[in-house]
Image (cartoon, rainbow over all chains, first blue to last red; front, top):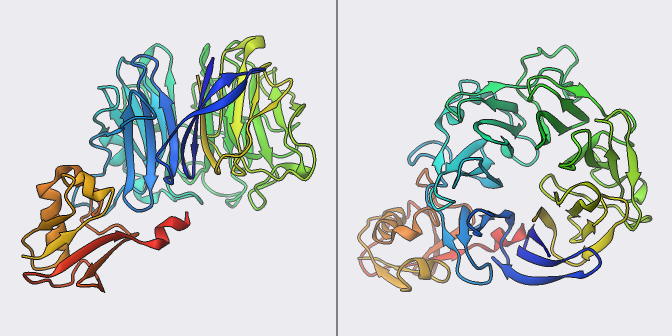
Length: 354
Length: 88
């Protein structure tokens, strides 16, 4: 059975089921509140949720029973008495070290928990990064939305901030360096210096079997890195648009990636009124549309950066994505065919499958 | 002392009590005292800067008020979520 955690504008929905068997909403939590992201830690069985209440501020909660009581995690806040406040949480991510969980948020901040999500601590090196005063928020704020771990090495992370680019650490977050070589933002003048920070990365996905390979959906561009995020090559040719947000990979195939193109930054909907996922199996040299079972006409959906995930691999790869229309789609055959998993949820902010 | 009145979910975080008599010369003083007395409320009404969250409204004796509004003994401070926060 597959569990799909769907963070929506109006709460967390837990779907349980499987391809061919259908899905049931087995729990709803944080009714009425925006749940930016939720994940289950398979090491503890615990569920964690990042909730950005417009009234009471962003918080992380955890529970062993999604339909029961949730406890608030400590430490998810900026230093007291400073000039800034935490605006929003964007992502939760399991770390490689036992009990480690990361949280990313706005204004471009990273938190780390080493006790399974009960207490978090601000990453000071990133908070005090000397270039921070130059960081520019994207349309969604100054969001740290991507945290990619390195399988087996807890010290190596790649993170992405919109719009402050890619940041890499090899020492567990004690120090950070930029990883932006080769990115070409069309929204900046052509003669912008190469060390420009204002790079609007939308999503990174590191391949678990080949960790030096990372795919990126950029704000106008799809890229691949084969040197762990130090430099990037354009792999967008062949796509109907190089704009989009989420990205997925098949863990069985380091040459695989899936994107969901949208028309453009000024028109963030699926092109031609058709919903299609695009798949590469040659590391981005070519792309093929995968839309069998997805809406084919009058379908102008927006899929956000956290709203695409997978479980399994190879021929049994299950893919799930949700749209701001409230529809969640799934595939049980690596994207060859698709079905409605939950058609009528509130606007979907995130999807996490396990 | 002024009296701070809470509704859910703030009431639950404040020991499941709706009314709290707290020392303070301003609304902000009383809210700081409230958070000190009930640490689970930390960060729910005032953010890390000590600023009242944007979509929280306060009223003193029924009149809309600000964080800096002066209060006296016996004043009632209602803390309510603003309707503007539900827009998202």
